[in-house]
Image (cartoon, rainbow, N blue to C red; front, side, top):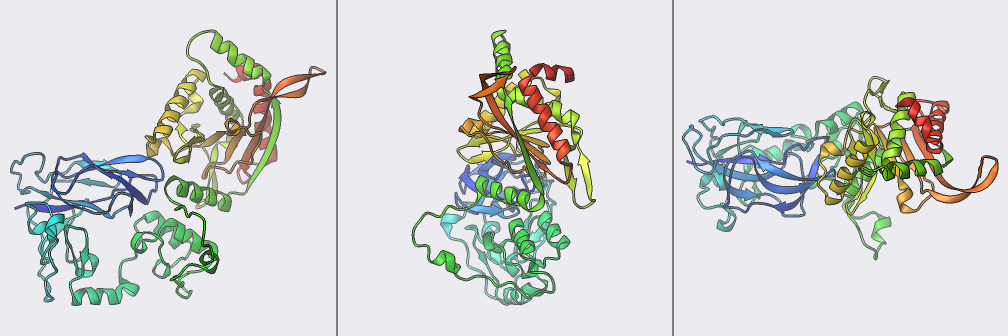
Amino acid sequence: MAQVLEFKLPDLGEGLTEAEIVRWLVEVGDVVAVDQPVVEVETAKAMVEVPCPYGGVVTARFGEEGTELPVGAPLLTVAVGEPSGSPAEDGADGSGSGNVLVGYGTGAPPARRRRVRPPTAPAAPTASPASAAPGAGRGAGAVDGAVGVRGADGTARADGVRAGGGTRGADGVAVASGARATAVAGRASEEGPVPVISPLVRRLARDNGVDLRRLPGSGPEGLILRADVENAIERGATRTDAAPAPVPSSPSPSSAHVTDGTRVPLKGVRGAVADKLSRSRREIPDATCWVDADATELMRARAAMNAAGGPKISLLALLARICTAALARHPELNSRVDLETREIVRLDHVHLGFAAHTERGLVVPVVRDAHARDAESLTAEFARLTEAARAGTLTPGELTGGTFTLNNYGVFGVDGSTPIINHPEAAMLGVGRIVPKPWVHEGELAVRQVVQLSLTFDHRVCDGGTAGGFLRYVADCVEHPAVLLRTL
């Protein structure tokens, strides 16, 4: 007899709480092997193909393409073979795949399934034939609520427990089971489960006294997201002793009068950028200083390097090399603030982020151990990560973990900017366009290649003297590249 296992959207790492279904790679009724990719999803970080830890026949899919699902929500169900160790074809043997991605993995399921006595209420209707796979049997439709399913962590549970004692058909529609569902619903506001998946969100709410039972969620099916908790903290409302927060049932007056224009959902990369920049502005007391520098000699040095043969050296790589040398002299700016312990953590490695504009929006790929790379290695890594960013194939690991960011906004034809720090980093160096300008050189007026450099820094980790010293050293290296030789 086949056993139906439910595969949930796994934790894709780095605190991601939801993902959008971009493309299904399997249909209901298809046979899948262990670790075969079944769906392509887009997170706030990157495109990811999600492999299924089970082998068998797909009996149901949950969510259409374009649907955004929270981590832990069902993705699909798979009917696998008899879990008694008997051989089966196409990997449909009920064995697990191990820890495929962060937060999920399977072991071999036990030989016995737990069954729950069906309730006295009438049986839930079966799934439509079109949505159930051939051969899925009772496990796919869970007609009488008595067939247990096994979660992605290998723990047996009964379908009758989920959704307040209801069952889930092969078409993904949850069906309540009468009196039990009513009783559970009556207790939901006081002792039922809170619609929160991320433990980070729970901790944030606990540390700030936010009562999650009184907080309306903006995610799918009322899921409470981190942004909901942060908004509640910012309002200073929804604490455990506060009155329940009202749930708006209609658009606000300001939005109700808007009859024209186009509404763009704030999600995906754009939503992630908005959340991160908002948090940076809210938590980091930043300050900015800037200086104009004569980049003529730096441009000449680069031209001489490239004329000598070998791989071409990019200007961004030279600026990155200058940054890592400056951070070695001023390590305060390669740090982060630990609010829980009230400590400044100075980091031993420089993982250099750089802003890259793509069709999906602004992303910040990270060059690992930039301090240990020469200009040629930095050039190659910048090129590789930029190409991956444009293709949308950057992994979450290549988009996180930065300790300092270099932002070359000069490519957009602008001279200056006041960058927003990439939270939780402590500083960002901005570089404007390099343009010919009148400049006093060796006591005479001349036309030189001038660039504006700006440094935005976290005023908690250092004062203006340190920030000014860092920026002055960078400018000196730009104006006199030979200065950099002293630190090589």
